[in-house]
Length: 266
Image 1 (tube, one colour):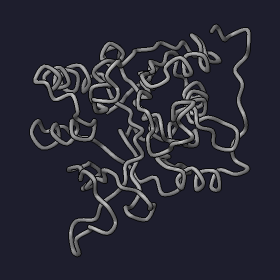
Image 2 (cartoon, one colour; image 1 turned 90 degrees about the vertical axis):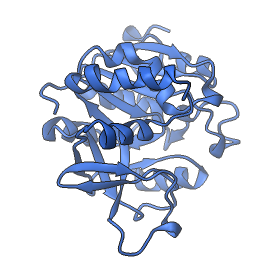
Image 3 (spheres, rainbow, N blue to C red; image 1 turned 30 degrees about the vertical axis):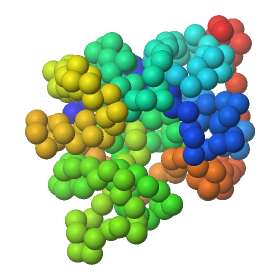
Image 4 (spheres, one colour; image 1 turned 180 degrees about the horizontal axis):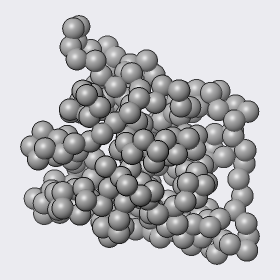
């Protein structure tokens, strides 16, 4: 449980976004724009709003574009970069492992680099001291993703590559995770980071973050708190259809953001 608002955040932004090609041929997916604001700039703006001071971005595919777009400061945020040179052959847990120094710095937000969301998603995480947000699955299709089982306010497991067409009747209700997490230092230091070390040492570099968390829930007794987010506006952008939906639901809600030049150093 998080008792203090995080001052640090990690954004996983190393992937090539193959399902968004040709849009991602010249630029990485986190720089795809929704109504004039890139996914990454939207996240950084909101992190600054809720009091985050330093963000570590894991980069890989077209890393120079992200570094140019964000610099070493973005608004009032200090920006650090960690590079994955094997982004095309590894899962998100490997990117997370590369950012382990940031994870060990205290309470920390963890964001995937393809989620466009409103700032209240972060505000409510802090207020409710929850670790992630959930929305009923498959109400927000078309997605092929890792929905979760939710019981008594905690995630009880993850389903990998679940689709609406393969849902089983009378099975436990599933929920879609927003892929925004608020992780506490007492969970990160003794549990999550050591397990990441073990996974990478064992050579399991293609593991996804959801698989890591699922293992910790099922085998190590991790209690991953979650809250319903039905009233929040957000969308995960994996393909062109997702992008069109995001632009529609965020129309008249987003404003292009340019950080102050005197605070930004490229």
